[in-house]
Length: 463
Ligand SMILES: *Cc1c(COP(=O)(O)O)cnc(C)c1O
Image (cartoon, rainbow, N blue to C red; front, side, top):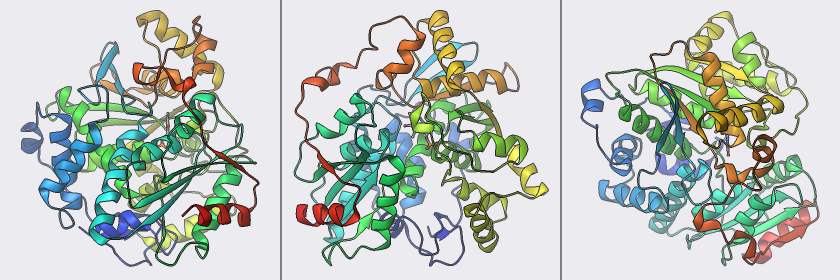
């Protein structure tokens, strides 16, 4: 399978090169040239498969020309062996035809483990084959950093440097990163905010001369298509469990960078009968405004109780726009240039297409806390603030009561104790067993000034 850029100017690449390349040279994002399609009979025949078996069926066409079948199987098995729950992505019922898909059973308690456990193993596999080493630099406001570190800690061919804003991530989130003590894992606490971390990341990608000549940078954020691919699987897994392909299923997804819900959109294009895809946002609601009112103006970012969705520019939205604009790379190029300098207005046709594929809803912090309290009262089930936003959006926007709604639970409540404690009268939402000693573990990180020379010499000294 070939992969092409959303801006139409960069060369087409195969899967392996897409994984190593990140952003395309024309500034676009890579997408498959054409998607695999599965017939209803084929999906029917997958009923009862384990998560790993199903992952193999779904991912195979994306990687077929780069990887032997046995290799893909063993990468999948290795990646999901670190999950605590045997079902990998279990479901819990919270109401009539209302389900929570628990995507937090991986090592760092957030859905990002689904993609990053796989990506870590995949990079290791590709790099060993090529006898290459790479450097990963990531910027994190929380969940991505720990999931990336857990994914790469055992990779001999990867050195990983994760920058987080010093004293601005929660203790649980910091400790999940800094207590991983390994030769190839480096945590940098940057004296600045998350934007400073991201700017440092962008500047490092733009000029990689600080690296030894045999090394290059690899991106592990959700512009990496391998992450999206791995996330398609749990849409199939949950829908089949609820009766697909003979029954339609709807999804509500707490959304930030638009990666997770974009995977759902691809699942639908590939043949899964998805009725509604609901984009749920917090106060940083540019996607809700865009979908409901064609308002794509940037506003000041506010810090919410659901920090992993505090995002203004959702990179993966460009992948969707590419489809909505009939895959016209130069149209996307123009649109994104305009967006950089303020906003973008979509044409009527594009708005119609957008609204036929997606619904949306937004919640502020007070409403989020209310939902956590409400659902706990109804069911004694504890939601994390991100999941709460998705669940409420599902309740408000679902088209009917007959179609099951699956709400993606993107994080474990123990990861966001502040929001949970505001809603429910408990001392502290308990950490799962394997992490109960998190606060006793040794930490290792380096505080650095927000100065590119200092960061780069720290990195080159560590290699
Ligand atoms: C990353 C994240 C999100 C947002 O997912 P996107 O793919 O960026 O839209 C939502 N909730 C949690 C807990 C996350 O970590």
